[in-house]
Length: 167
Image 1 (cartoon, rainbow, N blue to C red):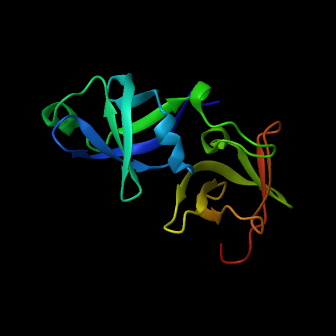
Image 2: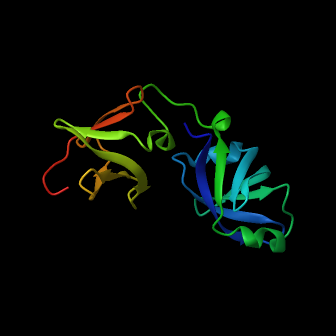
């Protein structure tokens, strides 16, 4: 299981006092106002940072970290991914799972294994798309809706799918 979950990507400085806009990759925009500790994914590893304030501009969080106090300090962080640790992740409801935890699961249909979940992405309509590396070398893109994703079994590490012709 993953220890960190990506919740955003730092985009551009906001003002001159070290604030930065965040492109959110979390389902909950409200979660940013409760952040106290998060992590920046830097070349040499994860760096812990402390959030001192959060505001919103055009539905994007704008964060201020205690460790950065000027535009010159925050500017190099453009396009850096923002993470939280598992301890501070949003609690899951019954039947929910973190996407990061199912990467690598076997993807099966009624005939058996068709491949492995390699990654996921989201489209403009906030729908998750599973990226499946198939046994035949091809890649399938499967929309995470009940018609196509029938079951995610965390115990057996499998995802049961309904693949239709043309997928």
